[in-house]
Structure formats: C-alpha cells, structure tokens
Image (cartoon, rainbow, N blue to C red):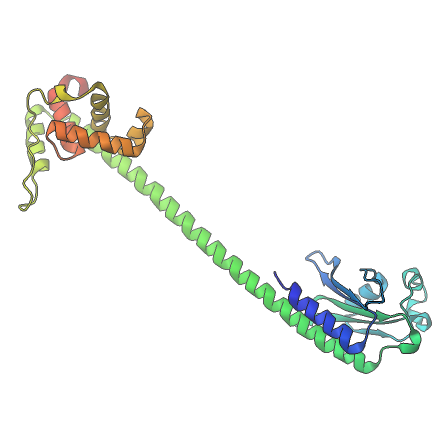
Length: 282
C-alpha cells in the first residue's frame, strides 16, 4: 500500500494549520500494535516518534478524540508516569476512523500550556483525520483488488498448466496405443494400413509407404535407434529424453529419416520398420 505521500500531506497540513510543535501519524497493524508511520516537527523542535502510549490507548479504547489543554491538571492522567516525564503539555489525539474501523491516530502536541490547542483546532484535526482514513481505505481497496487480480491470473495459469499436462498424457497414451496396435498387425494387414495412412488429399500426391529394399540400410545406427523409438509410440519429447538430445535435434533427425525411407510421417516409418523387422516387435 503506497500511501506515505498522502499521509505525509495530512500530517503536514495539520502541523501548519494548528501550529503544532510536533505531529505524528500512528497506524494500527492487524494485531492492533501501534506504529509511527509519519513524524514531523517544527524546525526548532527535535523530530522524534516519542508519544504518550497512555493517551493513544485511551483514544483507541474509547473511540473518541482527546483534547488536553494541560494534561498536568487532567485527573484522568494524574497516574501516568509517561506523560509526566515529557515536556508536551497540550495534546490532541484523534482516531482515523472510516465506518466502524479505526486505521490509526493523529497525535499532535505543544510544549507550552499557555498556548493550548483550541476546540477549533480539535475539529480541524478531526476533519483531516477523516480524510486520512479515507485515503487509507481506498489504498487498501486498490491493494485487495490487485491481489484478487493476481490470484485470478495465477489460477488461470495453473488451469492452463494442468490442461497442458493432460494433453501431453493423452498424446503419449495415443501414440503408445497406436504403436502397439501397428506392431501387433500381421504383415498383410500392415500393408493395407500403410496404404490407408499414406493416402493424401487429391491436391497433394502421397509418397509411397511401401518398404523398398535397402531403405533401412541407408540409416545410420543413430537414425535406426531413433526410428525404433518412433515405432514404440514415443513422441519427440520422450525420444529426446531417452536419446539425450534436444527436441529440435530429434525433429531434424526425423526429417532426414523420412527422406531416406521415402515416408511422410512417423506412422509410416513405424510400419516400415515393423514390416522389415517383424520378429523384433512380436
């Protein structure tokens, strides 16, 4: 939540308007702990984050603004050692409330009781505290909306990843089943299946998938290894893993293999190998 600029503007406006010696903007975290978010002071006054916890807790407990013209004469705080240990004699502390929620406090003070804050000062601080609370509320709303969008985006990415995994599994299963089915066909049926697979659209003449003598002999040992993996129904990714190659290299190898065998696709290559070496696939 990037609201420091707004909160700084609020406390500086308070300081300038009511001529406070010091001003602090205190925020509450989720556990209810108080943290000084912004601290300002007049040039001739030391800037620190020292404030009366007694006063702050009183305002948080009652939910009401506190205006002390001279706390040394206020019976409610006669037992407070923390107040008596400080030089600040006149104090205004106002809750930054939006609806039923208190986001924090605006705490301002002066050293001279003779120059005490007025009721008009109190009202002005209350108005600015409301503005600060609104700014905090809007900043949190923006943060929640951004987080919701991020969660939705992550959920969509997880869904796409799961769908991709499912598609890969289905593809692997389909390839494996197809390879097993082809290897279990008798030679005559394999020939008819090869003819059916090799049939191309009228506009594109199909290459023959009928094995020609010596075609497999043209393959290198590495190419025969890869075409054997194709016949087992493995896709390019699986072949790359088994053969310790990249998928691009596998694709390049298969292009060369298809050219040498005179086939157009992996199914025709698998059929060709199955017809040439029937005993190794039974």
